[in-house]
Image (cartoon, rainbow over the protein chains, first blue to last red):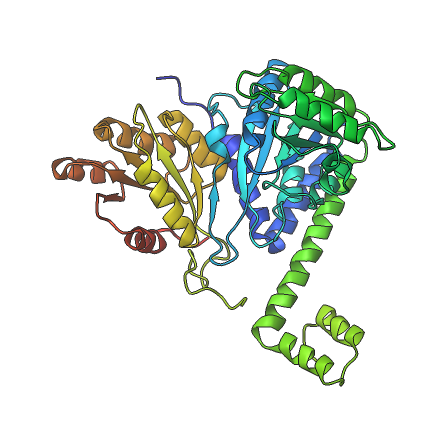
Length: 307
Length: 146
């Protein structure tokens, strides 16, 4: 058996992520001290935060695992935030991304954390932005944020990440699919994964031809997370494209955290108004013509109580 | 509709967030049906369940438990290697400063082996026939408030 790896730093970081997941004053204090630490640190390169998104089952986790291995060969410290959905009914979650990600217990240059969405109702956890700031303060230079298998319209990752990589399977749609607004619009880079399967190159060609009709060209790469084909090229492309974007990254991540907090407060208000019948009362007032729609919506936004 | 579900995985009065559980398979043991049934069942009981996947080492599991900051590690063993692997898991967690993590085991573990496993720090052993509800109730009762 190998010598016992030192888990002290890893454990402190993991516990601090739990604190920001729980929220409240302890979370604010931790984020503030991380930002203070970053202000005191000599100005250097900010980390590159890469959003990895795409439909369920296209191989996002496997690709992140392969990209992490590749990044470690270049001595880059790599962290992964892997987000999976929470049940709206029970609050429970099955976080299965670690199944695809190789464990490297002896490597202090790697950190993987699963986050449940915990009621964000989105493809990201509300704590993702705050967690990315903690990872920055802990000295990681490459941070992958893997979203819930997202569909066409969940753009929250674009606010948080410096660069958004959309992963597609080898059987994506036709050229018209690539012309639609939504997630493809937010993608800085498109990857057709499972390149070991037939059809991947043709799918990439269709995507290229659909995306070519847009104003800014979006590169389309083919990878196979299974045998790492195309993975070194993908990492090289990510780093080349990301280099110019990290300058205001910290500001954007703080902004993303502020938005997540505001959304959390709004969700709490709506849940309260729903639970105590205020929402139904407001709806009835609108129905009876006693209250204008705008007034009712403002009341909901204001204090969650009917006037 | 948003009224609190009666089946939440944590005591609302004590905890603001779900109990986190790592379900782990260690060693050369490919039988993961039970682990998957438990992972899915605890999800339905309101727990946040991280599944390790197959054939992990003890070091892998300790490292994952640390990074995920879990309250519980549930280790499923059907290979007969429980007498060596489970005490190593507890020792590994303690050495990593995570001795407060509740370690429970499931699978085929003979009655005769159980006292020494309990002595080694395994908090509970769930054999065949245990219901998800029993496991959930045990974990809720034995995980401290956070």
